[in-house]
Length: 256
Image (cartoon, rainbow, N blue to C red; front, side):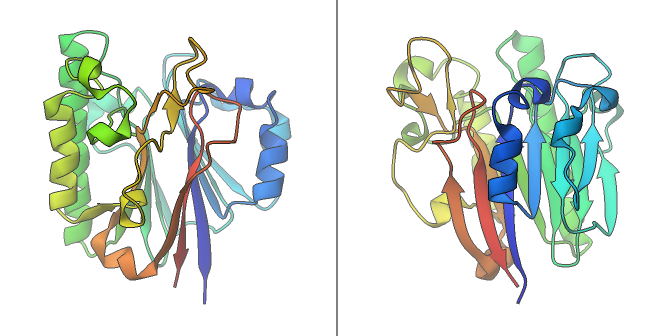
C-alpha cells in the first residue's frame, strides 16, 4: 500500500516564510508533496535553506517580480510536469503547476483575487471557467485529478466569520460561490467537507485587529478531489496552529 500526505499552503512570500521557521516545519512534517502559492520570487531568489534533499522543486514564477507564483515540492518523481492552464493571458502570472503521477494528477493553483476592480473580478471568473474546462478535459482523458490551493473564495456562510457584511465583496460573491457549486456538481469533492460540516474552520485571517487570535477568518484554501479518488481519501485537515503566513497549511492523506 502507498500512502501520500499532500499539503497546500499560501505562504505569502517564500522568502518571508523561510525566515519564520519554514524549514523546521518542513523537516518535522516531511510531506510527500507540498504545494505552495504566492511565492513572490524568481527562481534565483528561492532561499538555499529551503531546498531539501530528496525533493524535486518545481517553481512557476510570475513575470512580474515579487508577485504571485506557485511551487511544488515532490518526494515522488512526477511522470510529467506542465505549467499553466493553456490560456496565454494567464501564464505570465505564474499561477499553475500540474504534476502527473501514477495514481492521480495534482494541480497546484493560486487563483486570482477579484477585489481590485470589476475588470480583475472578470479576470478571476474567466480563470475559474478555464480551470474547470481543463479539469473536464483531463477527466475525459482518463486522469483522476486533485486541484488544491488558494481559491480566494469562501464557499458557504459557515466558511467565513462574517458572511453578511462580506456578501457584496469579492471573495464571497454569489457568482464566485456558484463556481464552487459547479465544480462540486461536476464531480469534484471538497475534501474537508467529506469528513466534517463543522463551522469556524478557517485557513486565512486578516493581519489586522488580532483576527487570527480571535479566529475571525475565512476558509479559502481547498483540496478538491475527483469523486473517483474518494475511496482513497483517508483524511483532510487544516493546520491552523502553523504560523509564518496569513494563511495556514491544509492537507489530505491518500492511500492506494
